[in-house]
Image 1 (cartoon, chains in turn yellow, orange):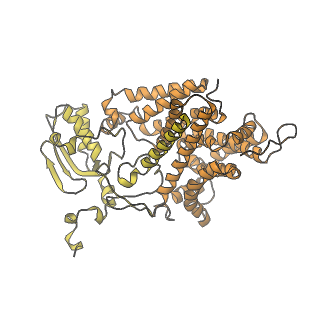
Image 2: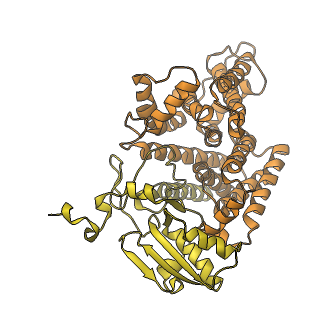
Image 3: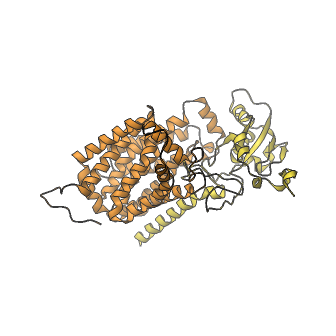
Length: 179
Length: 322
């Protein structure tokens, strides 16, 4: 009986490892799933794999662009809040949605009001939040995730060069490209 | 003092020390904990570390290395248990990039540590723990192969395929030519996928192919150590190769590995010489590659002597093992 229990434990562990290593295909992790040096590329609805499908779950994999954050009150220079505000306001960088939520959460917890202008990670629409602290989608990180899953920020140019028409909602497609 | 009655787990415990040396060098070279930028990165990286006191992830890391030093001096079950438990905590609290070798090590630690926690202390339990290590290794490599089955990796374009790019670098630094031949590109692309998908499972389940497949895996990883500056991953993966051996086969190889002989000393010397020949510059992980290649050369010489060399004692060749 104890041996059977141990075997069941190992089977469960292997199932967990298998599920973990499949995460890139559902947009739940890129770091550390044995994807090193593999050249696997993916977007919202595509990847360059020969047979694995790409079905995104949630927005953990996505990146906001054109982010501008204004804090009230202004944070003291050199403070943690000032570092976080600088990270949000980096020029020409795309910010991972979950990293953005973690940063805004810290600022809100520090008593700051965060006004945010950004291009939505999935819809690509320009949006504005007068008080990001009141919007869970912008300020509530998923606390069940223990570690970093994706790069926290990327050059915007890299993200743009990576976008394919099928990544964009139909409204965002250039009109000349549609019948 | 021994970790286990299973010699494979004892060697695994011994190999954890160089494995974690590689991990430390990787973290030092990339995370640069002493830089101000590292502190800012701590804050904008999501994860459980944000809910901890800021010193905690570093305290866990220091605790892990204290346990590794303890294990280096005394290979005992409590020290190894401490290393495995602290590694799990280190993984779950690390504020920076979680490397691929860390996920492999996490599941390996959970395989051994979990079986130890749930089972009674016996040789049978330890053998199951070793089987767990082998399973984790096979799955790790299988996914590395699966992810590489894509249009970029299997192209012959050095701008798209890291296999072709890495091979070209290997040829250049090894003075083998400025461009690899077509057959070498085919081996580096399709061969990589085939090796990662098949070599570990064949080595584990087919006695006759075990040593050739382990040697293939070591040769496959050599360019990663020699020119790609990532000796940490191959070292941590190769620690688990002990689990691909049956207990009897492992004892046979170990008899040839315990003491220096012409085979293992030559293997270690060739390993160091090859690393010195190929390495493009001196650096922490490159120098660590010398140790990795020496260990692999020693292991390769010992395995070859066990397979091909003359019988050891009184002219009696050990009975065939499964």
